[in-house]
Image (cartoon, rainbow, N blue to C red; front, side, top):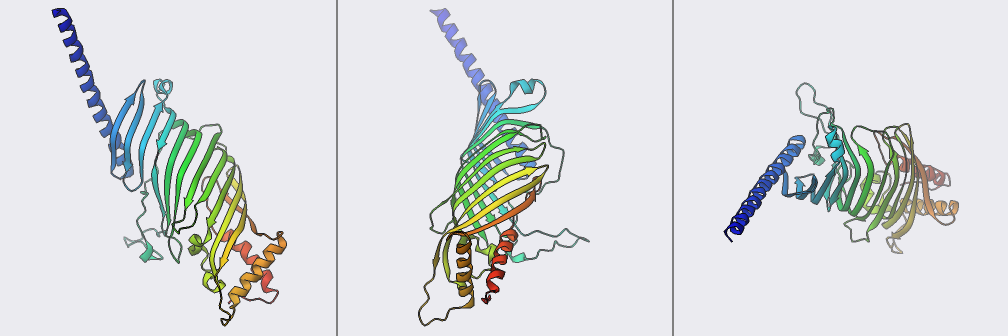
Amino acid sequence: MKDWKKLFTIIVIVVISFSLVYVIILLAAKTIIANKIQNATGLKTTISRLIILPPLNIEARGFEVVGLIKADRVYLAPSIRSLLFGKLAFNKIEIGRPEVIYQRNPSVEPVKDNRAPVVENQSELVTSVIPVTTQSKSFPVIIKSLKVYSGRLNFIDTTAASGKISVIIKDINFYITNLSTSGIKGVSNFGLNGNLSWNTGEPDGKISLQGWVDFYKRNMLATLKIENIDAIVFYPYYSTWVDLGKARIDKAKLSFNCNIKGQNNDVTADCHLELIDMVRKVRLPEEPQQKAERLTDAVLDMFKSMNQGKVVLDFVLHTKMDRPEFGFANIKSAFEGCVIMVGSLGVEWD
């Protein structure tokens, strides 16, 4: 009996000792990881709980980089084989319920002669939530599979001259394979689905993106589809060439399809924009019809006559894979081409 008591006591002591060591390791690892991220980004980083799963998998709960991203769960499954050869690679990374803030701000001219930076529209300047860091040689990291589920992206754009655009992409499910910071050879497949919230009371839109990309050769093929777009939300982008008030446009819904092809860093996107619904403000019988309203009617009629009763705008976007850019200039050019045609019929913009 005494021997059993001694054995039981030894087992308890061993279990408690290993538990204490495990807790100390977790606390130290949690602090080290948070400090590394905080030093790299300049933003306060916290991890509520860190779990180590056999053989060497890590799960972080309550992960947050203040002002940039927070997530309920981050799961890392490193490749032990790669670690043995001195390489950092992950078989799987999963991020659960992340929330990311992305804000575009007016560009600031470089500082000259120790003077303050010059901003075109200083009243709208807001410090970006994404820190500016100097370029440095990145440590090679390979991710075989990256998955994001139930994500949320808060997109804010203050660059438009006439107002701020705010859109929330929620219920994001995203995956990408064969990802590397050093641009290894091979094809990465990716896919994204989500819902768009306009903050206007209008029904949510839907976004989907599917395709593949070769970061080493800079080739890609993808399709982008966005349904039920609330066009009024993006009015600050096109307010300088369309007057919704004078045109008596109250609501407008769009759909957008895009086939994207990239070869040797040159990207061509064939885009298709279609008006699926429009609500016009009622004009009283005694109110005169303004030129902008007449032009809108003429443009819509011309679009319908050319596209079997549909209001469709097709345009092509050219950009670079390493520096992708998208602007409303292409849409504006296509729209103005139709306006010129309408103007030749004797209808003028006010």
